[in-house]
Length: 289
Ligand code: PDD
Image (cartoon, rainbow, N blue to C red):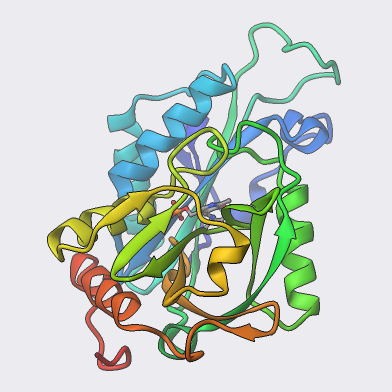
């Protein structure tokens, strides 16, 4: 499993050991590229259309021409699951860079993008889903186009590493006290039965699970308010949770060492977890209501 990545620029499946790129590669030298992480449950993609759409939006934003249409990409990604006989829970990592060429800040002409995608196993974070996770808060020092799923992740990995060093799962990022998102997930606050989260501006990644959560909230009649909350608001929050393709809907039970409300996953987070499981057809006994 995961042995045969697909080189999308050539629509070809290869053995992973034969996949080699020169060191003058724009993704490596400039971070000149974009990526996607797509969830797989029991050999089936979850929210595939949303991820494909976002990849094309990111490509357009950095003037990168992808060597296929959305339909062709979808077919190739489905082929990737079949070629690797993937039937378990996992994920696809897809990366598209501007290509290989002698180093030059200016885009070299007639360059073909380097695009590949590969599968790996990824179990659901069942323990964290049930008990919730701890987070820290960090200043959001990223650039002004965070809606692009860019390869430039230094601020994100530094924030996540700081969280890890403090034995936490994630870092909640804020600009002057206003919460944007986490280092690799979107974040939400619940107060008096309403969900609050940063609006989809250029300052956050437009999460595919975020889109799904908005849809679940509508179905569950829970007001979904796209209004940024503050670090101060967290202190009196009823619940806090984060979402991503790998984390699903994950309750946050502690922020910078202080419990969120009673320090246990709250009822709205649990309802959204159940809605997620139903939507992704992955109902288990583990996430209790
Ligand atoms: N990260 N915000 C940021 C900064 C992210 O990196 C991610 C995803 C999200 C959530 O997006 P989605 O719901 O589409 O997964 C929000 C992926 C999982 C990663 O980089 O590994």
